[in-house]
Length: 106
Image 1 (cartoon, rainbow, N blue to C red):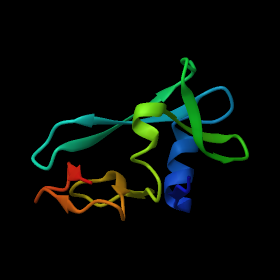
Image 2 (cartoon, one colour):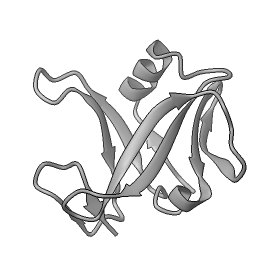
Image 3 (spheres, rainbow, N blue to C red):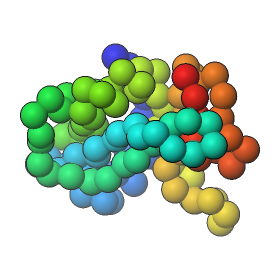
Image 4 (cartoon, helix red, strand yellow):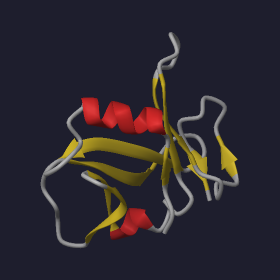
């Protein structure tokens, strides 16, 4: 499983204290115009079936097994644009996405 995180996103995750015992939890849930949407939060509790899908020093990204299969190739970036600033998730395996970019289909 390969996930890429840009340097900008790594810096932002460190500012959010997603290091050490805390980590970024990424999940994929049904929803949106194209079928699936990403959800992300900072967490500190591993659940049964969780797996680390990215590790770099003290920075980790964790996903449950049901979501992990949709994350191969995922690229996470961060933008500080005035409009729509925040984390950006780009998945080269997505075959469609909605116009606003908030959901995708595999």
